[in-house]
Length: 545
Ligand code: N01
Image 1 (tube, rainbow, N blue to C red):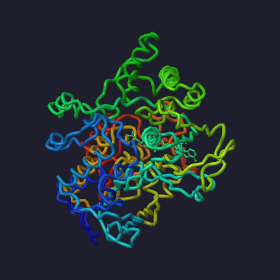
Image 2 (cartoon, protein in one colour):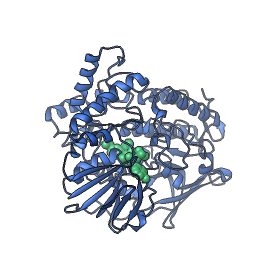
Image 3 (tube, rainbow, N blue to C red):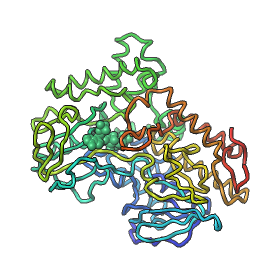
Image 4 (cartoon, helix red, strand yellow):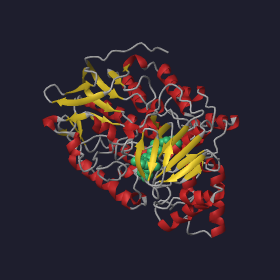
């Protein structure tokens, strides 16, 4: 593995920010188009989310055979996953392997965070400044910055006074953290905490989980990879990948087309039980209307609440763990390995912050309205400023001093989650308004990267140097995204999908709920019609639909 530092060039044709799965594949496609391309990455290596989220228990909730690139038949045949759901470490190894296989590292400058990007109309170039004072000019600027890459620490009084280590799950140290003999407080009960708590409890003397909102979680049933299962996938990869790309979630899974309300109770219960035993988020595909009908959703939510009561021995603790303020699935469904059972352990405790809120963090622990809890370590599993946080952390300025921060003041607006009107040659991969976080991210990444590559090839063919989403196309798309979201239960939850977890963030449902397959069809139709809604070189390439 070559780790020699690659300097930032003064100029390149395309600059890709981020070297996670989106950035790596984008660089590869740009090379294939013979477009000079360079990557810049804040972390010390490739891997993106899997580089940063190293907390104990971190693993993917999409099956390994599907959470991997599909563009390279040789790669998908040679790589071997050891478990049904891959751990963070194994996914990071995979990202490194891909970088080696495609010889990408020599084109990436690591340990470099972009601070600002300004479009210079005279040269038609983006001028990009890094935090370390570096500068690079590029015709195309591609944000492969991830949807969950800006960690959010809790705004709790006194947190700066804590004398022990504080770790955010999304910025976990690279050296091993040993909790042996320690009293650990975990703040938050989202996907990260639900994975981390059982793993931390295996080491720590005491674990105290501070829960503000109970969450729904289903078992993963993770297991060592079944060689027959792996062989079946590898024999039929092309067909199965094609089928996955047409699915709503970008994951090939069994979808029941029936309504939860059209079957009798015994049938419904049996279907939920079967899926609970099988594990994974495929639980939500038990019926077709779980994310559309509150009544249907209640049947699934009640099933999970009954499971929690069965799994947790102390009825008072079980009651505290019951989710009660959002339909199941409207916040990302968590997938766990013995999360609820962990509360049966004598050294694991749940504190319900709705009853006894945190008053302050002290040097030695946390004081709630009821007591002072002594702690050695604090783990903040408190989530991210999702989807827009990382993008807006950069000062992005288009022609005429147009600032993205101002344009998005009321919430993000983008055409296909890909381009923002007024910002030429600036692309986002899996940006707001695309299926992104509601889908198998790698499938969505490949689709967006392929679309961008197709668009750049088209520009090359036409001799165009500049492309931009038209305002009309963007507004039409935003209206479509909002209309479909409004027809679902998603907006009923105070989720990070809505921006609800960040004080002052506009509350807009950000991802596209129409599904990966439908989104792909729309993008393909747009491309086939000559890239409708994109203006090239200032001229309207084609009118929007
Ligand atoms: O973050 P979250 P996450 N005081 O925002 C609580 C993906 N992911 O890192 O709900 C007390 O979901 C907050 O409480 P509340 C996945 O898409 C995937 O866990 O705001 N509590 C909540 O409980 C996921 O959805 C995988 O009341 C505070 C928690 O912190 C996304 O990443 C694994 C607080 C934050 O939950 C984010 O998950 C991990 C405060 N001041 C993550 N502030 C897999 O693939 C926040 N909280 C399996």
